[in-house]
Image 1 (cartoon, helix red, strand yellow):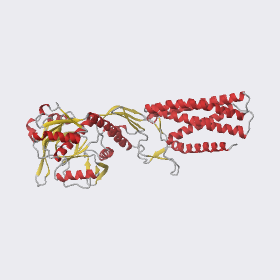
Image 2: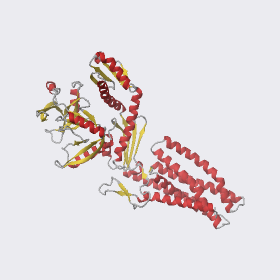
Image 3: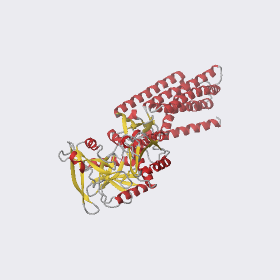
Image 4: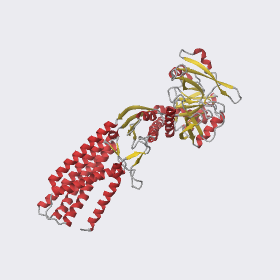
Length: 601
């Protein structure tokens, strides 16, 4: 035996041992880290010293059940949100340049921004300043002000290329945010990818609580802190024009900084839409109205909607939750109720301290997803970058705790840059997945048995060597998939069955070449050497073309097609290795060590 044979033996043995290390964790499985939460985080059953104990093949959505979603991102809303933020930047810039502005607001139902200067003579300077400073994102527009057009007004809009960038960033940010939220579910191998211009594909294999997932995934989690205006007569002035179904309430809210009792006047209706329709065009641009729920005293267990009059957005009366760094559930020891504790970064802490310091003894509305969650009174300047959100105390403790946990999840993962809409929702039950696994196993077992029978009957002793190589082929495939922590889908299982047939095809080519060499009178040793040499390029040519096709499927396919492509490529590579290296090793051992005079082939 030459030294090359021993090196090949060591290579094959090393591959078998390494493959075993990677495959065993998949076979051994996992158990819940917390027995009371089987759907939560899981841990390996192997001892800690086992290498690569967390590397395993996961089952895809079609094999173990779960959720399949296609979401569309409302990118137009993302543009509107950006335009809304831009109004604050424009106002601040003009004030820094001592150019007085009467108003900076978005034109209704558009992303166009209207500006009105205090002095008509400053109009040209305001235009020049804005276009010099924001010219890379804004452009002047005409014909959009209609009745608002005066000598001291002008309008700007986002450039088309900047709008495209906003939309693209919105989808990319939505993918990142949704991935952060999904990670909280401890779902193994979730798939969250962008599809087309504004769609997102989400696959959550093995998900146990699809309703909760839908609730968390669809929440925008836009968080704002807004100072209420309890002194204006805007709401009280509507008393004489209230339609049926809307009433006005008043409550002694709190004492202001001078010790005088503040009276909160607000409108109440059964539906938020009633209030929105009535207040449309009745609130000046200097203010905004937000809505929150409150218990219906006449119908226990039901809720009504009330209004909160808010100051317009400015640095002293408004801040967003974009600077949040963490959100955790805490327990109020006095009330025995959970709440969400918020932590801001350095920038957010400064903003929060400024807003609270400028509005001591005023109410601050905490607005989550357009709805007022609570409106506590600011008792003093709040430093340290901490705040809290209380929840609806009408619910029971367990329900409150779950709501607090869900809210903390969406706040930690960040707000969606725009609303998302569920275009397709498909849930695969575990029973259907189990049925798919059973049929997949059956196809793999039946296919393998038929191939083994054929090889043993047709190639006799050499067929035994081929069957050994076949078993190594399957071992190596699953080891590689486990190493990459791949997800096995039903098409992927089909790819494995297909590669088993292709592995046999390579062995058939080798065996027939060896037979040809034996027919011309060569010795078994020379026949094996000649047969493998002549079969090499035929096998490589056939498998390289298959790999090329697999790479194309992997590049341009998605979902199940990619799963099929991965197992196809891995299977082809393993089949070439087992056919050309592993079987050659055994055949060389037989013909060299035992010096057989006749091959069983």
